[in-house]
Amino acid sequence: KNQVEQSPQSLIILEGKNCTLQCNYTVSPFSNLRWYKQDTGRGPVSLTIMTFSENTKSNGRYTATLDADTKQSSLHITASQLSDSASYICVVGGGGDKLIFGTGTRLQVFP
Amino acid sequence: DGGITQSPKYLFRKEGQNVTLSCEQNLNHDAMYWYRQDPGQGLRLIYYSQIVNDFQKGDIAEGYSVSREKKESFPLTVTSAQKNPTAFYLCASSMGRSGEKLFFGSGTQLSVL
Image (cartoon, rainbow over all chains, first blue to last red; front, side, top):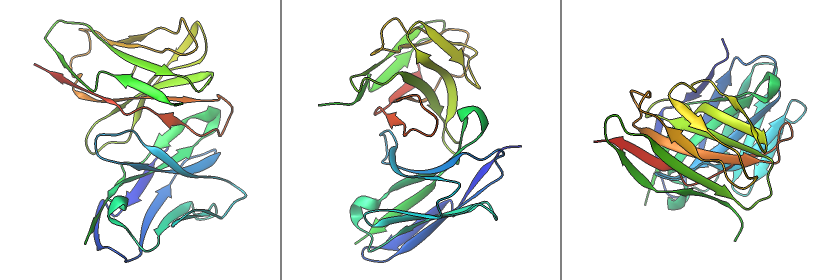
């Protein structure tokens, strides 16, 4: 069964600290892996998209990694800001352009 | 200001009533999608359209209907057959090619009175 699992479910950090969110998937065939940021009550916004051949991609303070052998991805946030408080969703593209969404990690950044 | 616009932001449905959610994009995207988001669950695909006058059922199409008469517009109707319609509904668009980024609207929260 195609699944995307994210951990932790929620995370609280202090402003200025770094954090890493995890994504494990069992999607086959694999096409790409995406990370989205979703503010409460808003639509998701794309952070990164990685294909099979890419193992790291950055977007400002966000860096995503992909290990296609172990089927794991991580999203690292550097020097967190209050505006980073949001849900972060891992999405895996499978066969036929089908997208499988994780349930997200809710990040709260406190001053 | 390019983007994808959903309206209304909040919508209430009475039992037995059909309601329509609007989605408009000015990104010149070929493909458009409707997703449903429930607490604690990943987004689930309701319907998608890759070209005008054509659309396909997603994973949870029962109780919903769509139309794609114009490239810019992809309205979703939640019919009375949908017995559990309370959810956050998200519209998205993309160029339609494999691996292309999805652009999402700001969502519509539908609740049952």
